[in-house]
Length: 279
Length: 96
Image 1 (cartoon, chains in turn purple, green):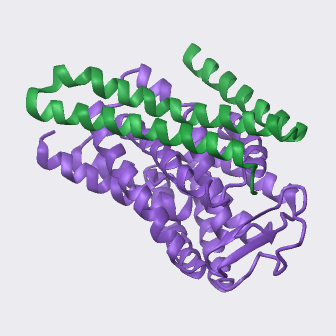
Image 2: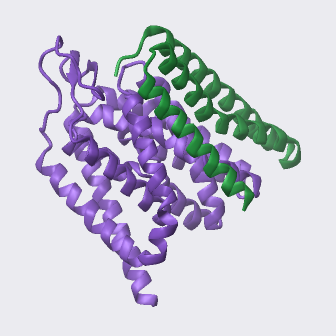
């Protein structure tokens, strides 16, 4: 790696950090293939760098969004229990369902969620009464769209937990972050405003990633130079993305989420096609 | 969810300190690598990555402290469950 490569990796990290900050995703789905294709980094090394950038995104975004009240730690911790159980069940799922089937189901699911999201761009999840008392897992935050504090209630908690279990399960099998399923599920069906869903997801992804990142590091699967450059890019991108996202209407964030879901769906269809084609 | 001012300030301070430390170590490591070469920068880069991995752990600890301060028993139990699951998962993976 030379200085020119260093700048490219920082730029890639900046992009991943921006996406992560705007949508509460790790950005690894774009960064890992880019590191593999552009620099020829082995997949395991690229995944190790990807995990480091997920932790960086989470840290950078959390310091901005917690102050705004966007992060619901009480709900987040509960969902993390669900996704952890789902992750532990990944080994069982892998015995009964092939990677191709999981990729196909994931592709169809993300495409369907993207369509539902596009149909509900103007869906509102906040209560228009600042004096209202949020329910057990609900909360209140300063809504930039309305310019005042708003309240929201979390509904269909079992569905949110189920989505977390599935997200944790699938993320282990396909190497994706669980935020791709959690964020739209929380926003579309569980009453969580998009800014709270993305910020809570960003808060959680760091905790999930830190359970495997030390293993990659201890086994020498994290190239320190690529990781350092990517992390510095991510920290800049996440900081910029958080501020940019706070200034954008929530409709734009939902539209971007639908676009990213569509791209991921396409990537998963390609993955399914390749696995089926080679078998 | 709006938390009490105390836990929020603690969380923000700890998180920012961790992010700043990580950034400083990694930037210094990359700078040294450009000027002096790979061997001399390795220690700084490794220290930066270790500091980075500690950031979510500190976040978990400050979240737990906030839950305790609010006397939210359900949240305390959930956060402890998360810590236990992550710890067991990590121990199992490292033991393989």
